[in-house]
Length: 151
Image (cartoon, rainbow, N blue to C red; front, side, top):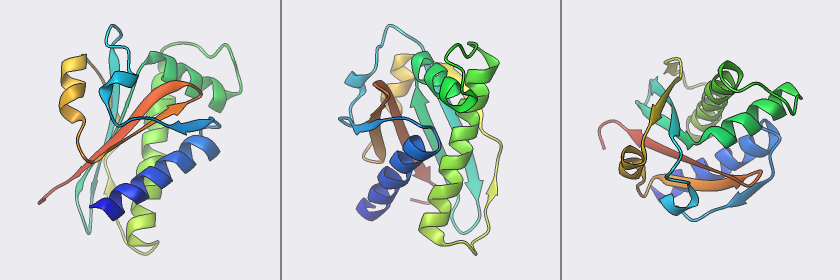
């Protein structure tokens, strides 16, 4: 599992930097990097193939707005649909890159369209595990966690 966690850490950081155009710093793999007075957003994408599982991006509104602004090239990116779409697309890109890195380009996986849900802090605390990696991306907290079926 530690090798997989290293891969997820490296792939996620690379996507945040290169695709999301963010400055990325490692953060403690703890919930304290987040503001529990603000709602959380989970972008979850499920995959099926050689392995089946789920990949989840955990963030808050400020991260989504920064991501949308970076992707759209507009510092005034609107709150709402643009931010949600940017987060969904990032989850899709992250999952695809992670699966390719782990299983090669010839492996076939079916990806279920990402879904974004708004949750409270207690639900987020339950997601943090030894399979969670955390970052500060453009100084905004974001975490990525995964689980594989059958483990």
